[in-house]
Length: 165
Image (cartoon, rainbow, N blue to C red; front, side, top):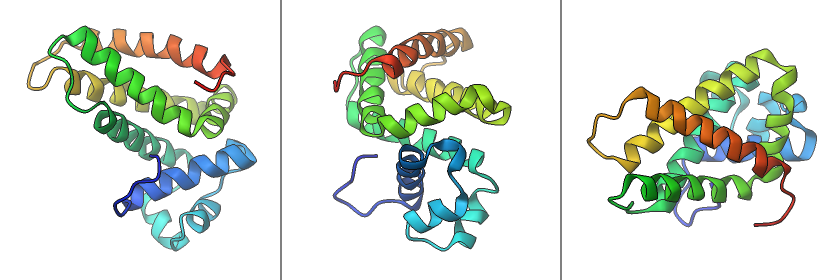
């Protein structure tokens, strides 16, 4: 969700605003009213999309997934290489919003609803990643589950890594 040259979608603006606030205030302090203000949209419009801050998580996940698939571009015919490229593109997008993403990850162990939402969002993202790596193929659920595990381990390492790249 790096600033795009073309007009941003409402969801991209909302996701960026939520991540910016999470970086600035910490995820537990993020409110829908503050996100709406940061996204320069009426709070009532945001509240039609999200009833509570946790509802922002799938929206953020969808935007990160969309951007990472777009960033990866045409993927390799080799499934292994395609999955690697897609995950690396995802981490490039995450790096752009590192402080906000880490804030959400740090809040999850203390918020059961947030943890559930993150788990569901990651599974959807890994399903989309598998679909992007193998367009048109019917991939078994274990591939998405395995990719989720690999991503989870990499994500924890990424959160702990303080280097800029």
